[in-house]
Amino acid sequence: MKQKLPFLLLLTITIFSCNTNHKTPEQLRVECDSLLNLASSTLKSGFQEVAVSYCNQAISIDSTYWKNHCTKGLIFYYGQNYDSAVIALDKTYHLLGQKTDTMLGFMYYLSYSYQKVKRYDEALMIAQKGLIVSPNSYSLMDIVSTCYGLQKKYDLAEKWAIKALETHQNDASAYFRLAWINQELGRTSKAIEYYEKRLELEPNCANSLANLSALYWDQNYAYALQLLQKAARLGNNTARDYCKEQGIDY
Image (cartoon, rainbow, N blue to C red; front, side, top):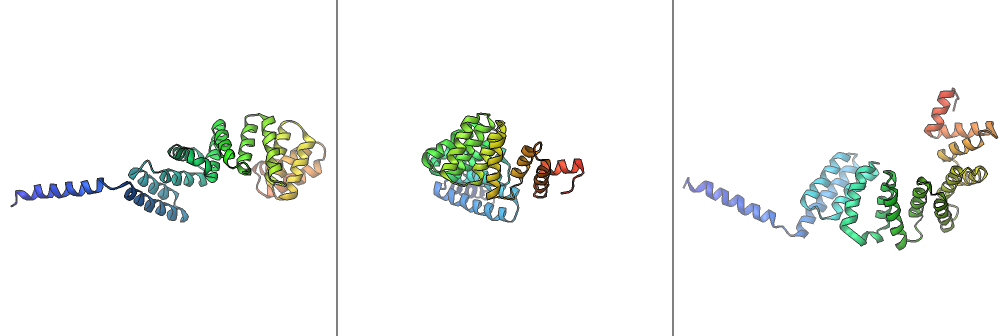
């Protein structure tokens, strides 16, 4: 009897192993969903690393399940870790294929992450594919305009910023984009006009205040300094650094 015990134990382990290794895809994805729910609840408590580990466990169970990679990518996205976000969201994109074209939020997250890691051509491709399906998406238009601007293709950047403004009238972000483009092109008066329109809609936009200050610096120093001090109070780092270096209270 004693000699049979090891054999019976081995047989039991083998049977158990076979049962767990032959779960249906649906059963595996139920396990993954459970882990992703844990990741979500853990993230809400502020434990990003633990949340990512739950996603990794889910990926080890089923690496072909797009939700595992998407959840992981969004955790990195909201943590502003765009290098890691791109890897996970790009994996999601390739797993889903053309289905992602109708997922407006996902297309924005992926294109924005590409933009942040300076992969501008890929950001443009994803954003424009999203615009084919959702032609009135301001957020995707803004990414297209921004990426063209960062590539110094200012004519295309301006075209898309104007299109965004025409689609979403009195949009503060569109005014900021146009102001920035005109500032880069040396069109000072036009840049001032757009920054001031932006500030009419969002008076506490620190970046607009700082940029507008630079444009007024040589023509109205007192007003420029006033704008700079307000930008510093609102948290613009460039304005704060200048005030500290020059001993200017803000």
